[in-house]
Length: 176
Image (spheres, rainbow, N blue to C red):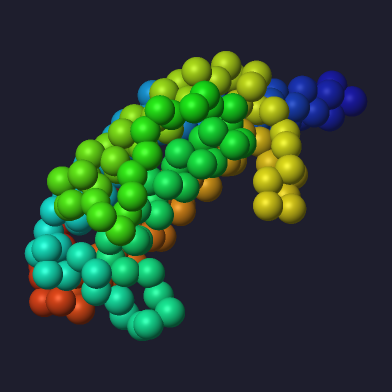
């Protein structure tokens, strides 16, 4: 009986240790996330700057977004989703993608990433964990932040394919 009790206590202690270790490593911290976010910002601007002016309106298909529209869409989604789902204030800036120069588009994307970071940093841990309906899914604001990162990566990947289709070597990947 004593051996069974000791085994049970040991098993329970091991289980609790594994669970607590898992919880402490399950998510990145806000600082880690924002470090990656800032790398995403710079990588997006680097991709934009690699495309020659002659390729800014390049499309892989008539129904597809142009290179310039892909990059604009990244910034526009960051602003719209940060404001609409994360509770951000009016960002105070816009851009007309049709008339924007490459430099103006780079400035817009930088401001969009900075705005997204400001909104994300303003969330308390409790607010970040709040659940809401987003595109038919019940998710936390943390998951919305991850969605923004994934969305940016998706459209930047398309823009990289546009670079390659135009014979341009994309910038080297920045992971962390």
